[in-house]
Amino acid sequence: MPAHVMRPRRSRLAMILAALAALLTAYVASYCSLSAGGRYEPLVIGTNGVKAYDWAPRRFVHKYRWRMGLVKFYLPLYLIDRRIWHRQSDVHSGKYPVHRPEDLGEVARAWRR
Image (cartoon, rainbow, N blue to C red; front, side):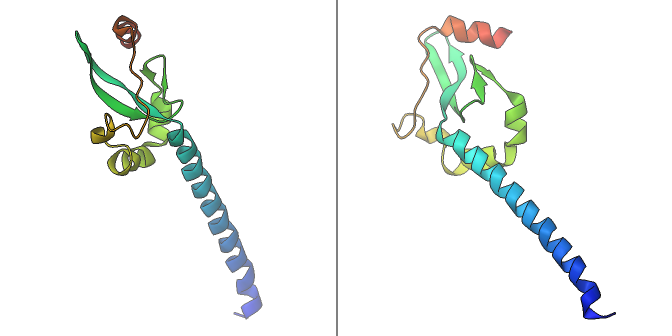
């Protein structure tokens, strides 16, 4: 086969790879943007207050309820984020914001819905 016949395949492959790279870059950049605006949200509450927190990128939690669609969409990046940057041990370190609700009843009511 002449070399000029192979060029369209290579350029088509190059375009597909470039598009995939652009999509992957947009996916990671969008998650980074959300995570940069995130905070620790209540995960477990008790009679004396919040017992445990979990990292929540911006828009992942609304009125104390997790938006599972976002969690599932970004799950690979979310798991990496929680393992490397926003670990459970960082909750009380002061490095990241923590949402400390004043009305635990409001949290409990939101979780029951």
